[in-house]
Length: 178
Image 1 (cartoon, rainbow, N blue to C red):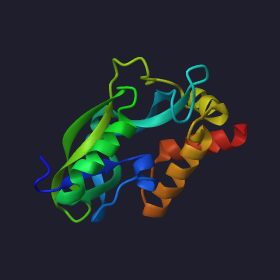
Image 2 (cartoon, one colour):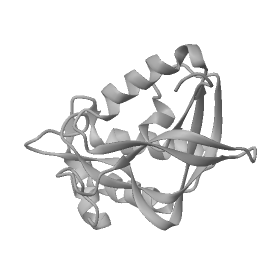
Image 3 (tube, rainbow, N blue to C red):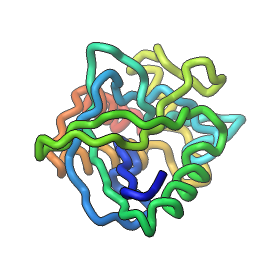
Image 4 (cartoon, helix red, strand yellow):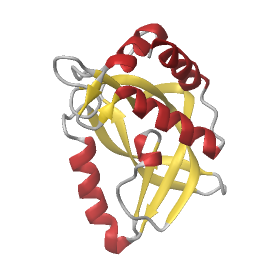
């Protein structure tokens, strides 16, 4: 599986905290999914008693998500994949899969992606922007305050030139509530 290396698609915290070494990083687009605060966080940005919200890829046939694709060379690919499984599959709310992403250079690659499972109890799709902001403004977990996660993601997307109007509106609402 790792003979040719491994591509990984990042759309949230993987953009600003990948946690693995990589040989190449390029802006990328994943079609058929949208980035959204649609997963309850009971480990990193919230607790079981007071869940936070984290980003997830949610299936949306007519939409796409812009993020970053990382290439991990073959000698490091298995270790990086094991790390990602420990980090991302902590509660089985994500489904691991390989999907085609379009790199900014025009090349298409098959990348490892973590997609939210809408049947999982941590799925939080359909919350209003206001409800999301209320949760994010108050929640804290083992990795810190939920609002820091939103702020880091919004700042890094902006640095990369990736516009996300939903995230920008949510960030403004959370800032007003803090």
